[in-house]
Image 1 (cartoon, one colour):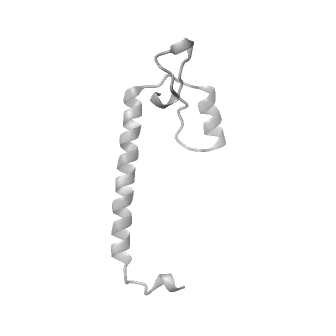
Image 2 (cartoon, rainbow, N blue to C red):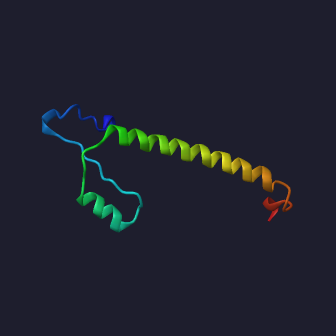
Amino acid sequence: IDCTGIRDMEGGQRVFRARFSSVTEKDILRAMNNLVEPDKNEALAVDARQEIDLKVGVAFTRFQTRYFQGKYGNLDSS
């Protein structure tokens, strides 16, 4: 909401949220036809999940790199 530049309903403008979990045409269209008022707690939960996903992804990538290092020869050469 902060990045929209709209401050507390100035000029009667309102911000809505499209709620979807997959990026398919069907889900995006459904979300756009069912816009909802933003919920700060829900937004903070989304931020937390994104950060957790990033950290788990980094840890898993590091694990795979160390686990497979040297097991299959020089894969970069081909």
